[in-house]
Length: 476
Image (cartoon, rainbow, N blue to C red):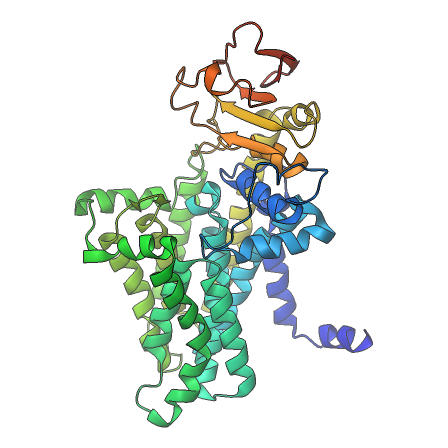
């Protein structure tokens, strides 16, 4: 314990500074209990299922069967289930989201240092952390981003001086990244190949060996699982079904279209102006960075190509091409020059102020959402007994604060808290088509937000009603 304290106290002041920045960046994960993140309740329910599927108190294994082989991004839920034993399901998810928000800052800093670039550039990623993928709730994909940066940094160091320790770390990171999400893993693979020491054959085996476990699992998943075959089919022919004009026009929607007002657009414009200022103020300065940084430039270029060439969706996989604009923006940061001397200090101060301002702006909107729109969802859940079957009909699914539909999966908050089975429906998209005959008598409760559910006599009655939520109980 004493040695651990000494190691923490021995950290450089700059490291403490970046740790503080990373902590501030995590605020959107914990500032409110119900942030407007669309798929958040589904992830909580999945963590609950892994943790409690065989717990009689939650009554889940009567209707659910646990299968882990249908997807490769399982590490988010496995780690979440492990953390939930000490932090609870909600707390575990907060820790995972904080790992993305704060971890991206620290992992990008590590990559910048490995490439010989100015570590202060990692501050530029903070305004990019709350993006469309974040509010949609694509958490396994997002958690893969800091792992991707860390794996790239470890690769650079391993290529320079292969050791057993760096090889073991790289192997673990590559395997963890594969089981986080296939898209960050693919970008890592491009960077690994681009920066590989091809001109030094004597290092090939030592440098390539750490990737063997991850590549083996990738081959197995691609050729022997239905999910892998579906994903590989999305790239067959490398044809996109979108026009070039529509693809260009959609780019802002995946950067700055998070909030209903113009505040996130203002942040994005300020970030662009800051990047241009850094470019201008660094003119005439000697170039910095290791030669391997030239090869790294292939990563943001690959993100651009993948955005324009991949489809928007394939089968049940949604948002394929749309993930690459934010990956481009984040991976392009190491290519930005940092001015020297007082000019660099000015850019650093502006980047810090913009990052803090963007985080505060996000938190203010999340607090408004919690206070003005969420309603008494916890009271509604308290009215339903644990381990039951619940049908969620979300007619009023939108928000006046964020642009996504954050209430779409709120029924899963019941499953996260009390187990049982929850049916997600597109009731808000198909009003009137979800007849009571499709629900009764299987579901014990119907949770509704907004009007639209009119059960006939002898089926369901109102058990509890608040301003926004209503709990209907099955007639006995």
